[in-house]
Image (cartoon, rainbow, N blue to C red; front, side, top):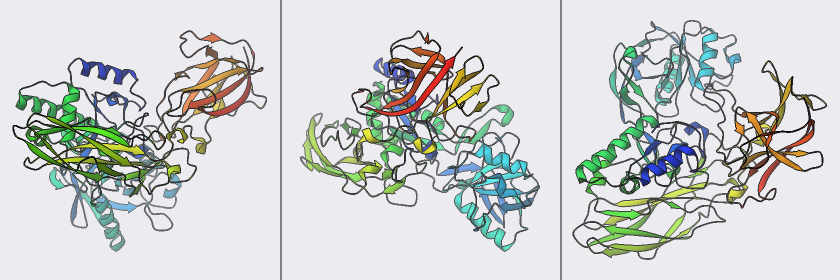
Length: 596
């Protein structure tokens, strides 16, 4: 499945449906999402079930691309989704968008074009998506009369949205560096575009895709589960647009993993349930290092690794469970039992080892209330001791091994770093090791900030009948026939219970806000993105018309009488019992007076 959507809990409807389908004998694989630039906690809903499989993406090592030539060197490019076709511009000059310090800019500030002649030229910008998305920078370049835009990636290609009527493409980091070097030597050098596609070895290919979403989920469970090839994939496309196109996304990786399920069942002549298939595919996946380094990529990015069908077929052992959730420092599971099963026809001896992976720090700025778009990678490694480093298992039998974990010595618990790694069982005679990934969070997860107060949320504004937002009235009186109070929020981390509570002027609880747009302000909630799909600042606007739900289980809103009410945004902290207000992050928006 590739349904998109946010990231919340395994209790959401699509995750529950996936769980039920697997329990009835099916295999369900779901795209983990393309929100890698948004940071932690962003795996999509559909694959969050305990039995379902959430699929991350790896970039293809090779790609069939159209290219451009600049300074005599051809470079591949990936057109933006909304442009969706090869660029056929005539030969033209390239203009890097430099700042005053000579550093390439991201193109998010339209003032960067002032005094710069880009008319009928291609603009080169930096692929940093912290400040805005690709549609915004494309619009600025088009307004400045540029004829197109190239976006230099950090590595490989970025997935760009762009706008429909503006040629825009992602290029590799080295390609961008080559363009800048040539431009500095010969500014009038022109760029030419290929008429056909060719094969290229892709920068950073074979490693996890930048766009692929990071876990964990709201209960610190290990998601995504596994990865498939999803970056720079030749895929079917509408005939009107050529029939084929190179596309990227976890939506490309997911059908590959579904196909891996089918191939395994065909070879084995069996139809195991989806969670049993997930176990063997995770046990035998290829663990990846970060591109250009020997460091293993975080489990929150690659899951158990890149699916390897041949290894799954050839493996003669398995490890269960297929993931280990160590949780946080307060709830730390320091002792875990795993079961190794020898499926071969001979006695086998397995050697156990530990392979650490990256620790990711999303809150490196002390006091930050929203996770950064890119983590600081730290060498904060857990340690693992085995009840026995080698275990001899007879054919067809199983053995249990106790793993004793210790949290990383390094790492600031106030920054909530997420660490991970793999426990590997290598057979003495067999040729396929099997492994299980683990994840943990150093620190108290109940103290992870929920509401993004750094960006001044939650806030109170007013909405008039022309759908215009503005500051609330000075006396905070809202005539609901003309203006309505709006509570704006942005959540940076999952919460078991997000609520907007209404109290009367005597501090008596009247109910939970019932609103148009986002529905009822009560219940579990995943985190929000920093930007929407158009690159604009993202937040939720809860338009209140004076209606409340008297209880969390109520389905019939009640209209309150005119009067003065206190609005309170409260988000339950993770791993707490839900006692209000002790277990909640509470933000009092003050009193408002409503009249009809």
